[in-house]
Image (cartoon, rainbow, N blue to C red; front, side, top):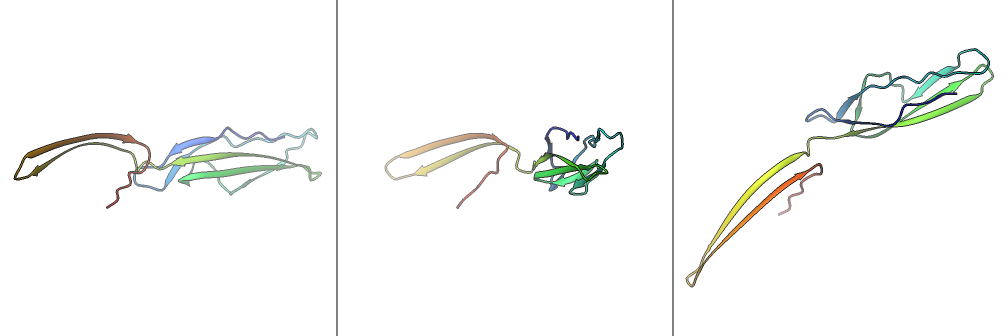
Length: 119
């Protein structure tokens, strides 16, 4: 039997595409009294840096009779280079021979998502 940790969520370092994470390596037990062989895919040993996105980690325990047990968990790394707090005020003044129009536009955006700007 082998039990993996819960899913791990982390943040990428500023302006980096990886985040550092650590977890307790699962210990396997077998009813034979002998310790099973444990392998991990991908071959990672914590602490380790993993790329932004979801990274699946799978541990497999195998006993001397070739019986296998598996467990998996995900490491989810979020990028932080899209975090922003933007306060912008724009004043547009349109002059016309007939009238003067003043438009004041203010916006405040706080988000964990990319800001897309189109022309």
